[in-house]
Image (cartoon, rainbow, N blue to C red; front, side, top):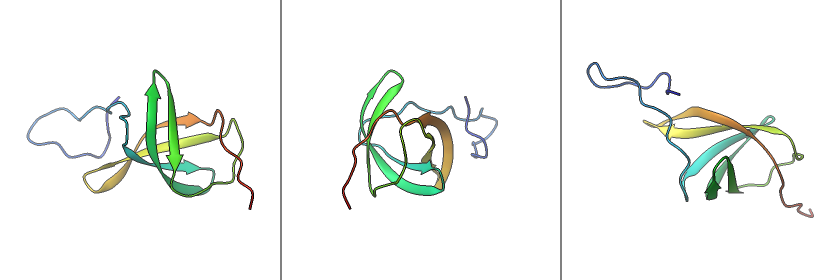
Length: 89
């Protein structure tokens, strides 16, 4: 998979999407909400993230993952919420 809309130097091919790394900051789109998230751990196709602000959602909800590339947020993939923590308000 390659990143679209990212400039490359000369005649190089477009850069590929790198795997998630620990302590990386991503932007998550969950429904109509946008929030930042820090990657705590990555195991094969499951990752654990800590959100910067709470989001009202449910398990099984689809999310979009974006990474900062050249000062712009670029869509790098999607996922699904497996479990989370309930907060009392």
